[in-house]
Image 1 (cartoon, rainbow, N blue to C red):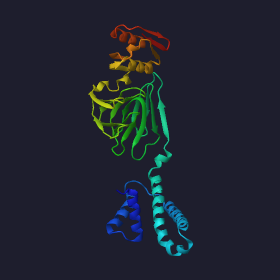
Image 2 (cartoon, helix red, strand yellow; image 1 turned 180 degrees about the horizontal axis):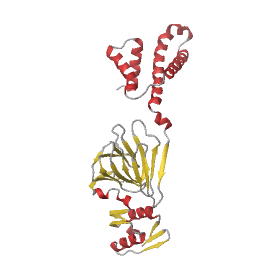
Image 3 (cartoon, rainbow, N blue to C red; image 1 turned 180 degrees about the vertical axis):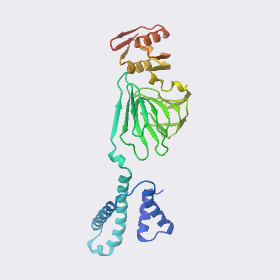
Image 4 (cartoon, rainbow, N blue to C red; image 1 turned 45 degrees about the vertical axis):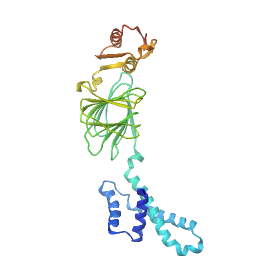
Length: 322
């Protein structure tokens, strides 16, 4: 099958030669007019004129290089017309691309991060709000593009997105793409940790894996959570009480049959400590625990009691287990 570029070039040749059917003439004119009607302004007239002059000059040089001097007088006019049309199409196409994608050339990105034990609220250019959990980073443009609202997340955040049906809101994590039009939801996607979770409080959310060969979109509604395991390439949907979604914003630590290894990573971010496991058999031991505004010492005591009274020791910013 012919590519769109080849089809456009053939159509441009026919249009220039006056061989287009009425339907093809309308197609060319509609294509030109669409840049204005769809909100994509054409470059200024002087830019198009400059592109045309540049294309013609390039065509002259090309003809001179390809044809023997004795034949130029007979061949240069028809060849030049075709070459100029194609070069003009290419030059004008580049100008149109630059005019319709200014954000890709001039986009300035900002970054917000949180240290261990610190939470932060960020207001985006469109008015959407982000609550950023400890040890997390978001990267977003100072001004969103004309088509989408894209940002990157490393860590955990709760999003309250302003509704805009014309500009989808897309969060890029290391493993997932999460897209909404306007809703509130929580994403946990700390680098190097499995799994990645997305939970919806209001509205509807679509998500898919970044490494999937075939893009399959999963939809979530309020009270639903998707858990993605990057090692197994698996998606598991579950239900979650609405009150528990993003409860970390109220300093709630909620572990649902989580391994002690993952719990220790969460506590490291929350309290700014480092864990050392002498007994590594405890790493995969699972716990269920929900606490609010508790000290690290009390949390470790509760974990120890429910885990068979395993020994632990706190020394400054270091916690030794086992």
